[in-house]
Image (cartoon, rainbow, N blue to C red; front, side, top):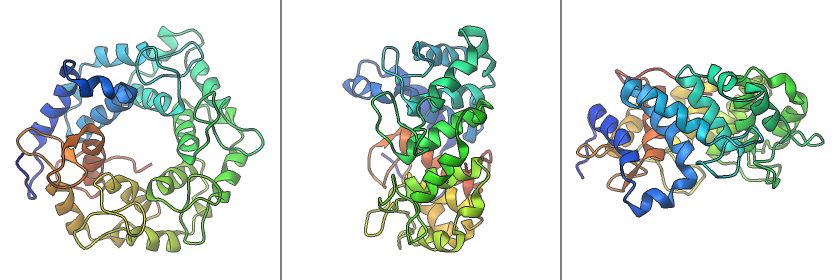
Length: 309
């Protein structure tokens, strides 16, 4: 592995993402089947940010997405897997990203309405939050995923938006952050989901931006990396989880941009492509995606700008 902290190895990263579906003889490929649809979204989005959306076949992408759809309208991680909100939002995001949302109406009975009803039915009518699937586990990740997908489907009117906002407010902590549920500790990833959901719902005025900006900016460590909670190690994926809510609340300049850029670039493999959680670790598509998304938020030259929500 060759590490470089000066320039983004764009072509190597494109080739790395293209290679991911050719490794079907590897045990790791099958052990990560539960992440297949999410992984496609991560890789495809990274390619779009890198300026190479053509690197994956559009038709093959569409076919795979629909192979993951279940009878209830939701999408599973891979063909034959149960539907879950986290895979469903990835499916919707992929179709929007490649301008293929109309395929929902063309290929399936009831079209996007069936997907929207699957998502809407996951909302708890009393608390306003969302379950991840039929088994009922709740988490602010699932609330955000449902709201994101419903927004992209132009179907937010199918849910009780005010109840969802009230639940998000209940997840607010004294430090300005948000947890996975009411009373849970603040965490950068959960903060992203809650702030992004509030942004989509037009309720950012409920966020204590000063207090939250302070908490998020304190996630930067001396080496430039960002962590998810106090006293934890840095991880390149927080280049998204921390920077995105900072961008949404207008506090992106509260972190040291140059140190953060240098940290992200130090996590790349310039020979085989991909980025890892930390320098010299193994690369994966999850960290590759969030690292490149973080670079875009930091206006790294040559990358496509993205919506922080």
